Image 1: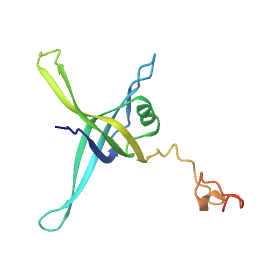
Image 2: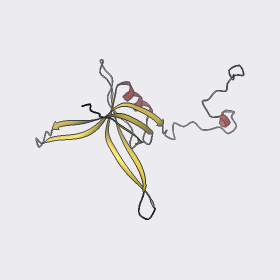
Image 3: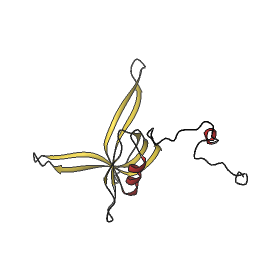
Image 4: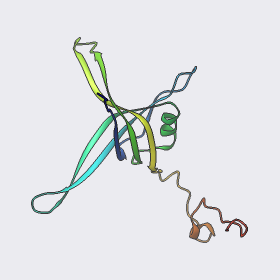
Length: 145
């Protein structure tokens, strides 16, 4: 019988990504993400309610983890695809066996990167770029076809 262990969700980072292991001597980088997923519904009276689920343990390995740590900030919107896994260990103080669920991400797509105010360049209302979007070059007449 085939088995399937896949999960996919879209949500906002609740805090900045944490780069735990930097790539050194052929070892892969490890980045940890915390994501909040909102779900809207209506109650009996028709009022809109928002339910928030937090997924606190998302591991992103390798170059994808490095990119997450470099580009994402708190509040960024991401699509995460991966698999569920369990970490098991023995508590050092009490000796009790412990475990936690986590998501090991195979793919992270950056849907909306939230920048801090300090990183945003001020928009110059008199510049030509203000009307057409910064960072988007104009096409030359020969390229328009």
